[in-house]
Length: 161
View: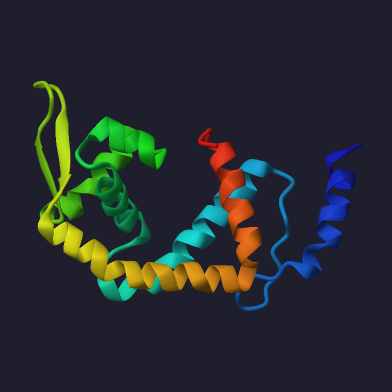
């Protein structure tokens, strides 16, 4: 089937998928693009809730992982976040600058150890209520059972289920 014909049924459904502001969003047949669009949308959604805390969703996630796991090397944190080491390092800079994460010597001379500081723990705790509101708002829009199913499906995508 030629590409134009393959896209026909997808384009026919465009009227049912609306982006904020009413503009139609044509669903992509590409799984990668669809997941990337959803990830960007969710990041923006959660960022709106967390904005008053001064943290972005990505920063909240770093603090939450360090709170759950305890000290980690940068590479270990990158694995937990499913990020490359360079992007993880960039995400850590403002957190370290603001005194929320301490970057110290690691197990050997080549690694750095990341620790949540008391200020980081306090910021995380103060922001959790905002995060819970974002969670609840998403579940109200999407459905609680569907949200759980989606989260578990995405865990399978990244190999964590």
